[in-house]
Image 1 (spheres, rainbow, N blue to C red):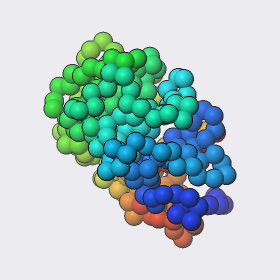
Image 2 (image 1 turned 120 degrees about the horizontal axis):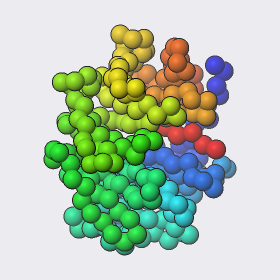
Image 3 (image 1 turned 30 degrees about the vertical axis):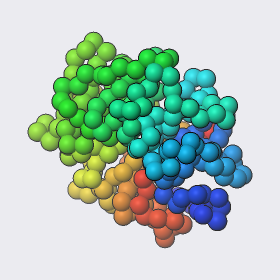
Image 4 (image 1 turned 120 degrees about the vertical axis):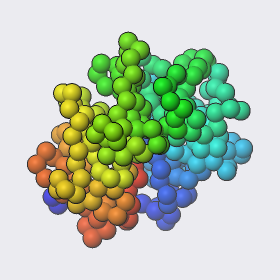
Amino acid sequence: DGLDFTNYGLREGLPDPQVNAMLAASDGSLWLGCGAFLVRFDGHAMHTVPLPSWTKESRVLALVEGADGAVFVGTDGAGLLRVHNGEVSVPEGWPKDTASSVRTLLMRSDGSLLAGLRNGLLRWRTGHCEQVGLPVAASISALAEDLEGTVWVGTFGNGLLGLAADGTVRIHDQENGLLQNNVRALLVDRRDRLWVGSKFGVNVLGDGRMRAYTVHQGMPNDNVWCIAEDREGGLWFGTDGAGVLRYAGERFVTYTVTEGLCSDLVMTAVSDK
């Protein structure tokens, strides 16, 4: 499709070449989690945001923005951090001693923040934090919310959980159509369809149906790490081994190192303003 790629690495100011998380903020900046470092890209240069010294052995795995412009940082090792007006702190009420491994974050439409941990799900809001009850003891890998307010919880080993606003729970696993019980990525698109990425391909849940996309349905590679949607509704899948796949509803287009990517392993993707 004639895309041009610009690569950013250590020479351009990245403190670590492994990018595990990205966030396109409302002010137009791009935030990146690079190993144990937090980086803000203003469109021209990379700026490393200093984190407390006690976080140096942690990894930044998740980033979301709050209504006030604060950036919440989920880490494996240091729990949850909040960055606002240049100051980094542990959010008031966050159980720092018992919730140090945050793998994924979701800022809900009601203003509450969900944090997926290695050992469960927490809900934080304005200084108060509580455990979210789940039907199974789960290690959380991904979170998403649909238009009806259902929170979708991807897990390592327990498939996909749907927590409806009325308290009912839906479970999707390999027994009823999920490609793999280890969920890597979730995305609710503009048509309110839920996309579920795994090592064995992508499921899409919409209109009460669960469908699958794998190499057998035309995917060049079905080892999916992340999913993003662009302004036109096109879907982008980051893969392990085949770079980025773009799906516009008809066919998959592949972009790899041959087309200019710096790696064929793509772990996160986001569309900026």
